[in-house]
Amino acid sequence: MSEVITIGEPMIMFVADAAGDLKNVQHFTRYIAGAEVNVSVGVTRLGHRVSLISEVGHDPFGAYIRQFLEHEGIETEAVAVSNEHPTGFQLKSKTEVDDPEVVYFRKGSAASRLNAERIERFDFSGAKLLHLTGIFPALSAETFEATLKLIEKARENHLLITFDPNLRPTLWSDEATMIKRINQLAGRCDVVLPGFREGKRLTGRTTREAIADFYLSNGAKTVIVKLGSTGAYCKRQQSDGQFVETLVPSFRVDHVVDTVGAGDGFAVGVITGLLEALSDKKILERANAIGAIQVQHISDNEALPSRNQLAAFIEKTAHQTP
Ligand code: KDG
Image 1 (tube, rainbow, N blue to C red):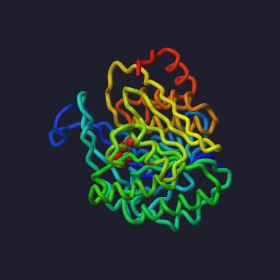
Image 2: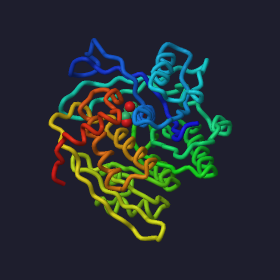
Image 3: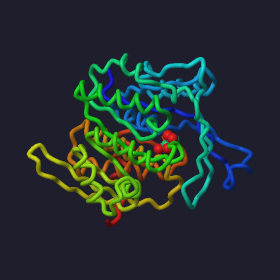
Image 4: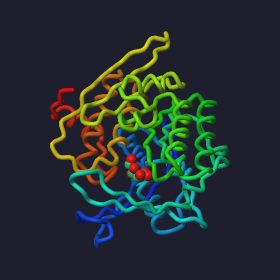
């Protein structure tokens, strides 16, 4: 059975071959996207078993996704195939300056119909960690309920729960609902991984310490704030009640190609570091390294490293000063 469980929507992603407005793009290259899929790929490549709970359509996109997941060695027993609803997909622009434009075609997708009943039937034996993001619960009322059910089941089964808010404002009805729901979920998880800008938006606080304190006083045991090119900051409550803070600088990246997926790479470092009982410093170093590798590639998951590739990257890449 798998050590790590996650739930999410795998999508086909068409990335524009040339820069410019998406409406004018003629050629696209096909990839696979989905935050929790990216995390599943990365954690599996570092040697840990992952089960993905999901649903795809009975269509060529869904078949390609299942084939991709199986090829990566991800456990797909809980990836159902729907005869009624299609597989979601997205378009992504090509840009070398800002974040790319992303357009979703996922409303009413198979994954967005996944409900709490499916969670009741899931076998948690052998699992140690549940990873969640704020994307899947944003898809529909059913997926929000399914996420709450999964947290409840994970608690009953003594799993550690990691949560990446991964804000996608276009998936929520409005800002206030997004903030309320994401913070509701974060407060039920053990390790919360906000980006600095996300953390400010979600908590109204302006420093990394204050963002961490917000989540620590709402139920989390550890908060890791992603600081982008500056690195990462962690504040953790020990079993004796004391707090420990760690700040680790990032790795030098000479050419950023695409920032999407960097947070998932970061989460891979945190999840595998927790499973391997690494120190906070080593966890942040690994997470920063995988995030830095990710921003240098256009795909959201193809560059996720094996153990040897990760070790080689950490060894050869100079640290930036914080
Ligand atoms: O974190 C990367 C994801 O954003 C991307 O792979 C697609 O899941 C996705 C989304 O909903 O944006």
